[in-house]
Image (cartoon, rainbow, N blue to C red):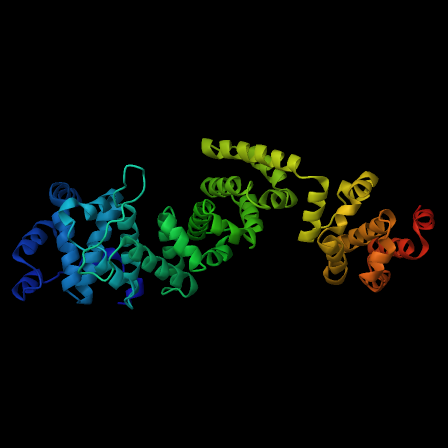
Length: 451
């Protein structure tokens, strides 16, 4: 059977020749005795055995993975461990029992992670993620750094986590399985990114950019789960400053807003809102959120019937945060954000005489950066509204700045504006003409013609 399509149920139907392994001394008599008691028994009976002697079973399972290379047997042991952890994820703590202090429980799994066998990879990734996440914590809430046995080349948990992140990033770039590779990697990341070291390793491996394309509205149940776990990863990364810096320069924010506008799945909306709440006070996120219409989106979300109290509280906090953010932004900050994002529209400030009088000298900042961007918009934008507003704003600059006509001429805006006088859109034509009149004829005569 194709290993990529193998199921745990199918694997556990196999009869493994444990007696032969004991005869050839690949397993001990004690191991054989434990396996005879455990193998092919009912779930409740196996649970009792694990309650009574769980660490002993873990030791033998790991020893088998270390000693036996036969594919069918390795898959069988992985299936047994996966079954144990699926039934009760807390049993991952068994791998950290004090009686196993001298055992290197990580090494066999790290080796299997890179085998050319999807079933082994998938089960190993899940098992290893649960095991490392279940290791004991110190009194201050941090994970212990549990060094492995000196027999292993993987001599610290740092090495284990870095190797695991390396494999996860490799899956996101080039999945071993066409449909399950990426979901498996994202699911494990959602478990592991709670750890600072994993966040650091993931960012250093340039993994954040691999998440961004996965943030898109979902339709099927499988894609909804993938979307949820991807957003969960982004939420966990929103607590880590180097990751936030990357998120700020990517398309993450617009994608998150598209998801939250179009999703009806409460858990997806909740994790996106929590992420936005984390990000809104950092860097330029707040200004971008205002510009992208998040305040209205929050209002729409609050009008819906959500049962999750955490979501409702997060929406209220996000709403208050955005209000504070809007208050802190000066009118010129908002204007600057609008221009830099290229989202020009007829917002009130454009036609407010006070805005131009009070902020005209700020256009000189960074060698007339905003003015240069407005001129670039004339060259590059295909949006008639943006072109019309850019022409109008240049006209306002010419009128209100003492050297406005000279500066705009020196920046070679005249040719660009004149081209737009023949634009197919009447609004663009009108404002291009108005700007040229300001440039050539002076403010008073242009105002007369505009009227």
